[in-house]
Image (cartoon, rainbow, N blue to C red; front, side, top):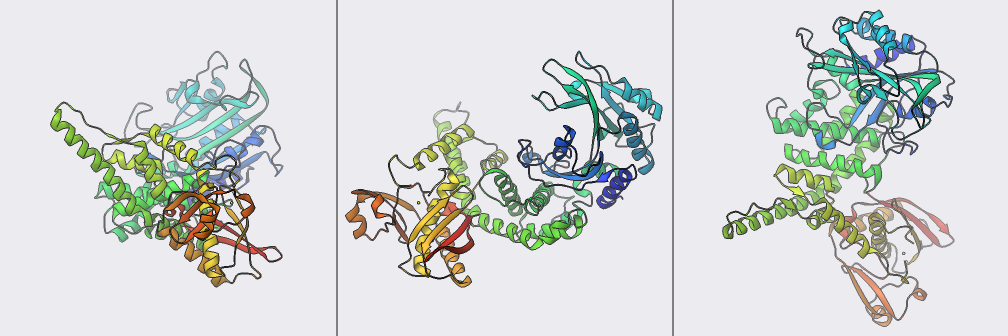
Length: 601
């Protein structure tokens, strides 16, 4: 059996022997230049250089093994072949060699390095159309290498052409895909029974408004999937049985007492836990590492982790098992290829544990709420069928119910949809979106009222705004009743809170404030809004930080009996939706004023 480490090494050594520079892997997180959240292909980070910009190394022959994250088919993970993280083995020519060298090298790599039978290799090339001719050049080169003419297939643009959709002035061209039968002993007609091994793209044209023109500096872009090739070379059909996953699957078997090969439900759960944990490790441990959140890439990470946590429950194991799996990925599987993971191991494991702890606290309540939704539909259907036997029954969970699961229990909509599908139901996504918009409208600050420093009124900023009330009350309780807010600034990503205090807080005081805020979050206290006169507010001991900002009638928010403030809003309905509060930094703001920076996770 060839291991993943051996395969990576063979790829890199082969192309280094052909004069290529190993440029290593770059961040998984998109930098915004390509309009995507994550790098989804090995060539994506190299796009500027394929478009003509000189590579910083000064070299024109490059190679690497690049990690990628693709999340468009998260719901398919659980079968034998879908993964959210994968690696692409790539090599590139930036205006240097072209088809003759590349076809020869791919042929050599497959037949001499891995010993594949040239008589069984199949290849597809571009069939041509009104814009660009048939790629006979590549086909002739393949024949000259010894590939049987009947194993070369001409396919249309949809199959054997690469270009950036909707762009003009960028390189594009035909590609050459390589295939091999899964079982060498069985004679099958292409493509039945064949697996795609890899792809060589020949960027020889420039796209124009009216078609394509020849490109002066021709490029080569090669992509071979490491996970797929590892599967193929070891004669396996289950991607979770390669050495990329097998130690993790064995650990899950040990923890759960269930056998991967003997229990279909357990097998699906183990695959999801293993895949999603691996991706979480890679995203948190990335050079531009992210953390779970409710926006952007952080939301995708949170969705993956919470899906894995739910499947831990289905497997009958504690979510702490994710940490055990993460250690294996970091210490045994990717220790050589991604040494940064070892450096960040403690941090990665801590953040995985934090997210598991946060979600576990509400998961059980949320599952009970979901079950209530289903039970309500069942009762309604039973009642309606009694009066009308022809009644077909409701099978849709309402959008407002789905939004409550999201807002109150932290269930991503996709998680509710997955839960519903497992029981034969669907979710009113349009109704969810409407409930979300309604929530945002209700949360907006009315014109002319005072706004605690918000830069936006997103769902996340509203949560941070509510958390400033808890922080203010906690500081009064821990430090002194004389502590008062002196200002704040809130974005979608963090809060900044200034307060009067003459000295730096001790680590013990910081922890006490954190613990008190989190205790009030866990109590899931209601946030109650009332309008009253300024005199009434003062009589009821509401805190007014900027008295001059208020009129005769003031808006007030109380959080249980813990926090009572005059404020224009907006706020969440109850504290349980805030997540976990963590102070990132405590520092001086000005003379006699301290500043806290904090995040909700």
